[in-house]
Length: 119
Image (cartoon, rainbow, N blue to C red; front, side, top):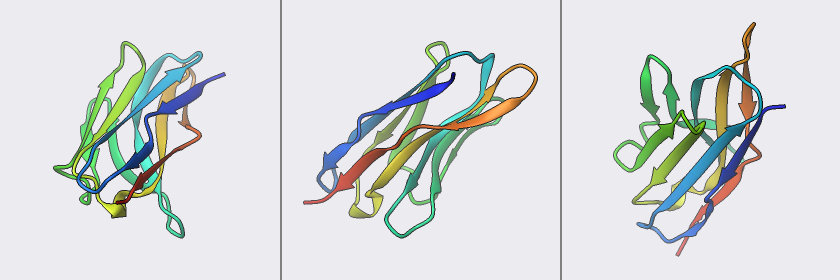
């Protein structure tokens, strides 16, 4: 049973910072891709930042220069450092991973962590 566990959400003031962490646990062969999506009230879920093995990183235009994704594949973890936060960054942030299970690959989602940016 594969699970993604997230932590690090919360309340920040505009211009502040938060750091999200996500750990993949369970039985899988390797990580094909891992990253973060977010969903604000009334909006569709959107990509924030992802790592893809062999392709590197990908950021949404709205977070470029403010958010930094990093990973530790040895620990099966990915992090999202969020700086210069804006109220528009308020959303539920979901960890996402595409994992190699051997015969096939499968996509997994975390339970989500709330990020609220407000003064």
